[in-house]
Length: 271
Image 1 (cartoon, rainbow, N blue to C red):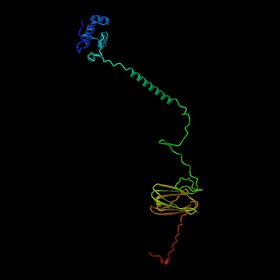
Image 2 (cartoon, one colour; image 1 turned 90 degrees about the vertical axis):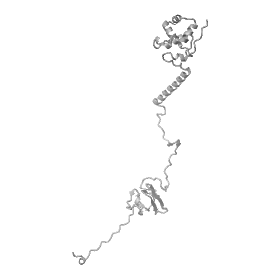
Image 3 (tube, rainbow, N blue to C red; image 1 turned 180 degrees about the vertical axis):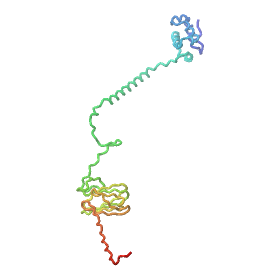
Image 4 (cartoon, rainbow, N blue to C red; image 1 turned 135 degrees about the vertical axis):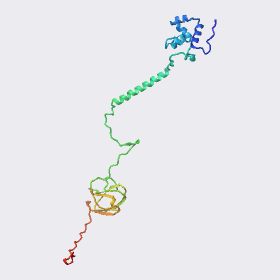
């Protein structure tokens, strides 16, 4: 006798009942074979899921389906009605293998970093040899040695000795614009002129006696041979200072005014 297939849209209980009847099995035979209570088989085929123990509807339905060769995954719509926790999809072996490889690589990298931080390398005990500084990937050349020429370039940073074989040290610093001229009197000496700007220093050495001319002396601080020169001029006033071979300021002599003679007695005013 050929039994009709399960109707379209059948429930899980109907699918299992049709599969059991197709194999000419009774509920009692199926219960005895699977070692299940008969009431469980009856409740499953009647879709009476509340009659089953909590958490057991889905496992029992799968157990019956496996015995009756019913693919419940093919009938997902019907199986979703069965109460219980949804089963997770089986893990992909390739995905698991890839995750294990990634975790192994990260663990190895972490161990290497810890070892690099804890265990000092052979180069840590060596003293670093200083080299020229590096800026933006470019290695700067070392600074040139100081000039040893008898007449240094104008504006070159010179030793701070007040007087040496190169001449007398003259230091000027302006708070405003000022025209400066240095006129040496030594044979072969040439005058030097320069326009000082705001806070612009100028150091030079001059051999022998010389004159220092400032067009705006009130804004310039002057030092000659390490001594400050109090020229006493105001802003906008010109000043010329004369200095000897040792850098001493040759101040002009202050004229002595004659005393006025006393008035005769007869010319005194009477009160």
